[in-house]
Length: 116
Length: 265
Image (cartoon, rainbow over all chains, first blue to last red; front, side, top):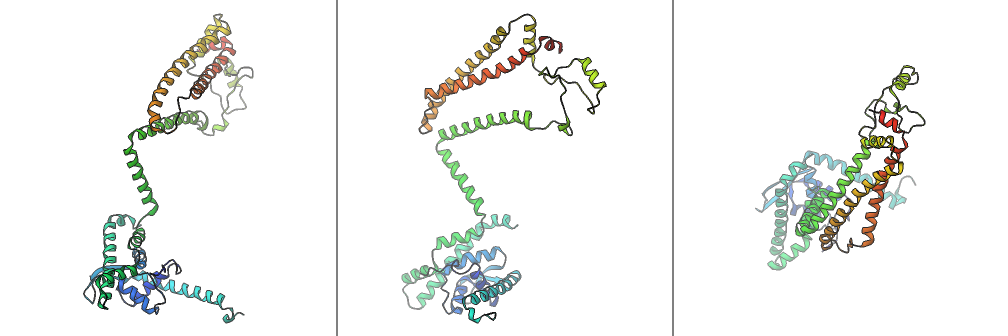
């Protein structure tokens, strides 16, 4: 069992990854986990269940909506879909994340910074 | 504000959530079985991968809650259950609170009326009482008042009023002084009456108090309210307070010219 929880990432990162996955295609919880783990080359070993608190937060903020239905493999699943405000929120999050990431890497690798 | 509908939707929200989590574990287990794992081992692996279901479910539910309010509500319910379990303690606690609160209310009501509340007139800070320097009561004869009113240049206006209404005892004392009673006698009479009242009150209070401690000592741990020192202290304090409370007005009444008291009809 991995100890990784969303608190070990920076706040909101799990939500951001969920929104990004949902932007590509609607999905249910299980396939979201698969998706995130595969696309991170298994570097992010997120505890599968930790997805659900994040999904509830997104539901409450109306950034995603959920509906019960049948999956392609004929299982009963609750499929999540990103909403319009979810898309807007994702754009903002990504741009502020990129700025933060750039700042952090400048601090960690001063040699690459154009100023010095 | 979407928390109001959320309260009523909550049962469905929670149900959806646990159902979803259950299906997630099931799907993982099915996949593991498809890879050739035994059903029991697949179940175990799926649960391990998922994490602590209870904690995760709780954390997910918290998202919808108003956590502080709900925990306060929980505390209140717990307190009520505790009170129902020990009605004796509940009775003692509630009675104590009721007595203390009512005593405080009375004291505050008096203080509020006498000290805190401003007079019910516009710009009450410009209101003055006119009186003679030698008389602490500020009594004036009507003729004096008329003179003052007519020659007044310092105030916007003047009005006469009896602000010591209800001091019948005072008048009675005045009459008795006028009839030739000695100061000492009068003081004794006034204090004697107060003393009688105080004695009756203290005895009754003492009896009730001892009775109450019988009940209380079952309930309140380590209470020794029958401690004679405490009882004597309380009675003495109350008596002293009562005597001072009668002595001061009696002294005041006696220091006033009896004729002034009688003239105030």
